[in-house]
Amino acid sequence: MIDAHCHIDLYKRPEDILNECEALDMTVLAMTNLPSHFEVGYPFFLERKKIRLALGMHPLYAKYHENEFPSFIRNTSKTSYIGEIGLDFSQEGIATKEIQLKTFKRLLFELTGKKKILSIHSRRAEKEVLEHLIGYQIKSAIFHWYSGSLSLISKIYSAGFFFSINPAMIRSKTGQSIISQIPMDYVLTESDGPFIQNDGEVIKPRDISLVITYLSSIWQLPQSAIQEKINSNFHRLINTIKSSDQ
Image (cartoon, rainbow, N blue to C red; front, side, top):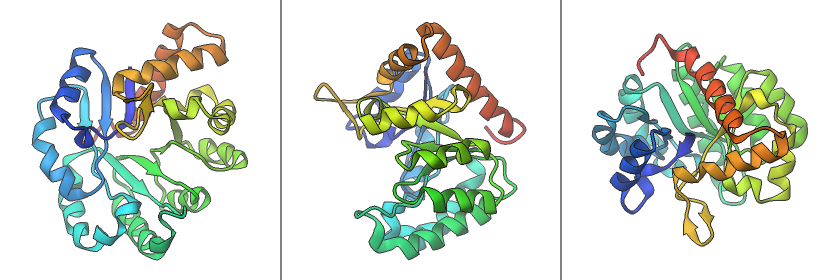
């Protein structure tokens, strides 16, 4: 299974999650919310075969962005994975809109021409995020937990970008509507742990199986075929950065 967006460092016992993912032979892209968090976690991921740590600058941490930016630049060469980055114009994030925009554009400028895969936060700012990704000629990105308009979905995948789907999305009517509009070729799976609960328990990467089961039902395909498709999509994405640092 593939977890394209998980915050392993935010679990109470991150090493237990790392070990479980390895035991299950899972591929995991582990997000960070700030470059300083990446620097703390990086040594723990070096020996992991299929688990990679992404370098992030979360939009809801905007008050730290200016001080953290040099650390982002310093660490960019250490990973092919960037996340979580993006914009958040919801009620929670709108007060820092201008800081977020400044940071996002600076990040994309630094990443232009580099072979990186970006995991994108876009809540209530989906159109702006897409415009900036295209404007800065970003080639490889995943819209994590997309919650925007249905009309924008085709523009996102037409630009070559993917969507990662989590267990919270499959439980809501809005999420189900969004999933129904995404072509099979642009779907990836994510847990977004530990920010989601399942049956009262904090979700873990292994719970990606819930998404596999759901997709099997709506696509009318065996679960084995769904896993093969997700793997194929992921490797198609990985091929865009194959010649860079992994």
